Length: 295
Image (tube, rainbow, N blue to C red; front, side, top):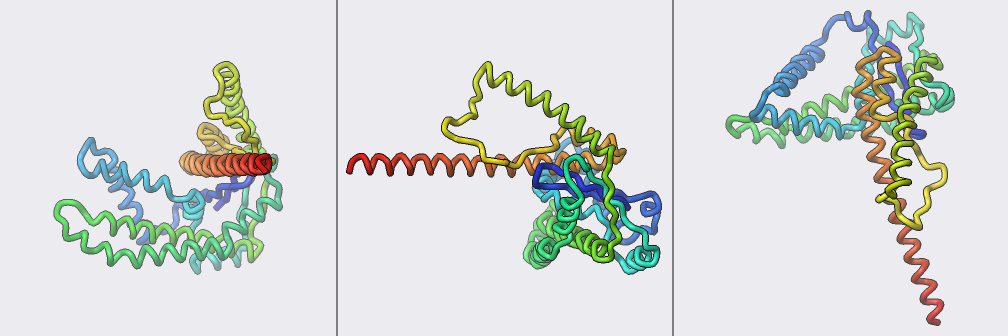
């Protein structure tokens, strides 16, 4: 397998595992068969022109978009089974981790990998995995309703499996780091992909700046100063496809676009909180000055 560590912003990264051909052709497990069956059913429901299947998939896809991109990335890493562990230990074959060296150095990559493999991350997925399992019996009475299936139960099953898969991926990274079975590779292809993505984003930003200069920015707030060294985006929705095309991993498109959307939303929320805090501080300062003048 091959790992990609992709900075989404200056402080957040996406991890993704590319399965190589020899791993894709390995023996299919029961979990893989069930997963493939569920995916086929979901795709069939999505293609329905109308009906409850179509509504379920539309609402379900919105729920899936809310699942953190870190979880999706860890799920792409295969679980560390006994056979795989023995092969990796006896073979001594290191797992390649590709990253854009123009945006993140080796120390930054190591820290990001340790975060993905840390006990805090594993504890998080363990906690919510058991929470989903505990919730399954509570949702069982829904099965008594006619016509529609027990959707809450199946969603909890999916979330329990998803957290288990993400925890397994985190444990696999932890194993590789502990046995020093990873080697970091600066990828010139990723450097090129990010450069192309920045060019595309710069053109769009320039267009917006020109438009704001002519029409005025309706979102700008007087008296609110930007934070020093604020976190900024390194990828956009459109540049995700550029990265996937350059490294020839088409599955990356969906992962990058999801991660970009989530990080952008988080940054907007943080920016709004910061602006509210600055405005509140300004009001408090003005109130104190008025009180001193009255004295």
